[in-house]
Every structure is written in C-alpha cells, then in structure tokens.
Length: 393
Image 1 (tube, rainbow, N blue to C red):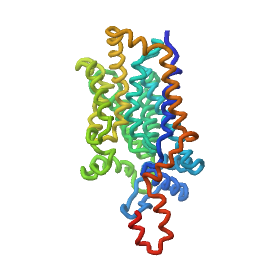
Image 2: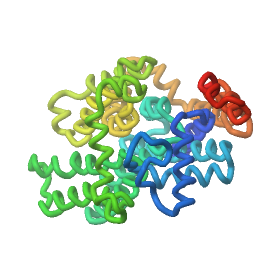
Image 3: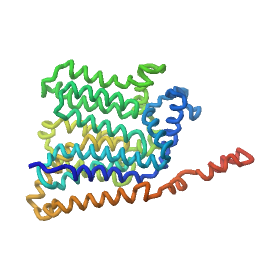
Image 4: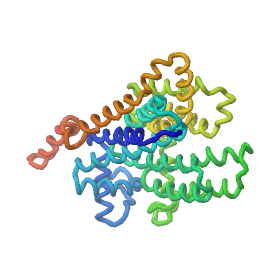
C-alpha cells in the first residue's frame, strides 16, 4: 500500500520557504531592478547598454524575470523580494522532492534515503541561491525533466517542452538545458536503437526546441537579428580564463572552496558505488546528463545547481540501494530513523527554520551596511568637489 506523500511535500516546500532569510545584497540585483524599471518605462527591451558605456550592444536575456522582480520590489520593497524568493524556492524544492518521490513511489511509511537524497540535492542549489533569474529557470528545467519522464503522450510532452523552452529563453541562459534534456531522453535512445521513435519526432523536436530561443524580443520579435539570443551562449563558452578567475561562480569547483566540493564528491561516490558499468549503460538516460553536468561543474561552480537537478535520479536510486544494504547490516539505526516521529521532527525543524528566517521575524537589512557603501554614496551629492567621491567609492 502506498503511503501519502503530503508530509514530504510539506517538508520540501517549507524548507524552500526558509531561503527567504537570504540577504538582498547580491551585486546583480540592483541592475536587474534597474533593467525591469527601464523596460516598463520604455515599453521595450534595451538594445544598447543603458547603464554605462562599456558595450555598444546589450542582449538583456533576463528581461521577463526582471520585470517580475521590479514589480515585486515596487509593491513590497526588499521585503517583497524576500517573500518572492521564499515562494520560488518553495516551488523548486517541491519539484525536487516530487522528482525524488518518483523513484521511491511511497511503498513504505518512511524512507530515510528519500530525505537524504532531497537535502543532498538541495545543498548546492541552496548554496548558490539568491534573488536572481536563474532560480526561475531552475523551476522550468525541473518541470521539463518531470514532463519528459511522465506517461503523457509524446505529442503533449513536446508541446509542453516547447512552451517551457520558449519561456525560459526570456528568463535565463539556462534555457539551453531543456533541449539538452531532449538529447538525453529522445535522441540518445533513437541513435542507440533502444527505442522505436520516429525520426521526424526525434530530430524535428530537437530543432523545434533548439530554435525556441528565437521566440524573444532578441529573436523574431526584435531588430537585432533572429539569433541575437544565442550570442550570450557563445560568450559563456568563449570567456577568457582570466575573466573567469575574477568571478566566483565561474571558478572551478575545487578552487571555490567551502563544503560544496565535499558534498558533491560524496554524492558522486554514493552513485559510483552502486552503479556498475553494466547498470550505468542500462540506465544511460539518467547517467549521461549527470556525467555531463559533473564535468561542467568541475570546470565552473555555476553549474552546481543544474548538477543537482540532473543527478537526482541516479542519486536517489543509489541511496535506496544503500539503504536496503544498511537495513540488513545495521537494522536498528535504520528502523530508528524511519519511525514516524522522526518525519514529524524534520517537519518541525524546517518549520522553525522558515519562521525564524521569515521577513516578519528576521531583519537582515544590516547586510546592506556591511556589503554596500550606501551611506558613503549618499554623501556624494553634498560634496563640494565631485572628485572627492573617488575616495569614498
């Protein structure tokens, strides 16, 4: 008999809400808000750099999310942005738990492997969380992964992925990973003769998704050229190593420091311990995207969140197998952590975390004073000699 998933989904959503305690001093947030204001004021997306004179052209591929951020800020200020971040992370966390639950299927009252897999997957996502457009893109990618593995008709799957790709192409450069999902779950099986899929469906679907980036003000609906939205992809892959060294999220995984490399290493070790070459080849659909994202993450910390999404399936399967082994060798500890009270204890802990991190309880505006020179900048208009501002900034 299958057990209800509601407690697990509550844990996931409330855990996501707890991220509304994250400070709003992200250096990119200010220009995201400025861009959203500019777009609404001009009823168009910018084609030139309106912030400074460093670039003649400007491909603002975040434009749709920036409008959302600015409207939220206009209505509720930084308080509203914190609430928005909590809701977005709650949705993303729920999708991660739903993906984990697909492997578990609720066959037992409680499975500690489910919780371990969920929190392990959420760790890299949470470590890189801020009120940025990539959070929304992670949501659409998580939905896309669930769609492609669902039992709905292939036509409905393709239409849903087409909509999600076109939407994400106006939110973040991560949109390209939805066609990547198609490559993993449709093109590979076709090329390896593992599934009888019509060539028109497989290759036509790929080009349909790959060309979804043209459905943008920087595509068919703009003046900059129908493929302007693809230019940021080219810039990411051709960025100089010197510039990457100056940006934390673009540093290699083991050069970034912190505990994330260790978490990813142990998760990879857990997967490798239970996936023989034969099993990995049999389950290539879920192994291939995880391996590709692991390779990308080793080169750039930026991809760690995507690695979490694409490694959920093999990680959950591996932990479920490890849990069965542990239940045979050390049954008492496993049974202790799989008692019903432990589930409610976890729910209580994540609820307390969400409460104490909430905008109504936790005032984190002091981060602005610590990280940004707001007070110093406010003195600039009153200075007699404008050149003195150099000393302040």
